[in-house]
Image (tube, rainbow, N blue to C red; front, top):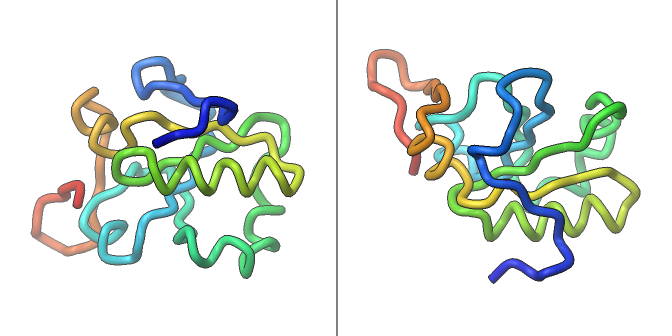
Length: 115
């Protein structure tokens, strides 16, 4: 369940360009399929990757995505508590795919999928 005070946006309401997207799913989920422009840092590794987070553009919010929205809500809460402007993506990559947004995989000839 997503806390009410976490800023959240639906995939349908996301811009199609100029988006800073942070994918917090596990490595196998990322390899199977992810948004082409996303940055990948698994949820459990966020605190260890502060230098990577600092490289993200700071002129717009970080939109955080996982599979369905639960892990990304936790990541969004952590980012907000640590000074970043972050927004949870409701429905996660499942909604991303349903909305027809592009998905790429890292498994060669195997078509991308959202795990």
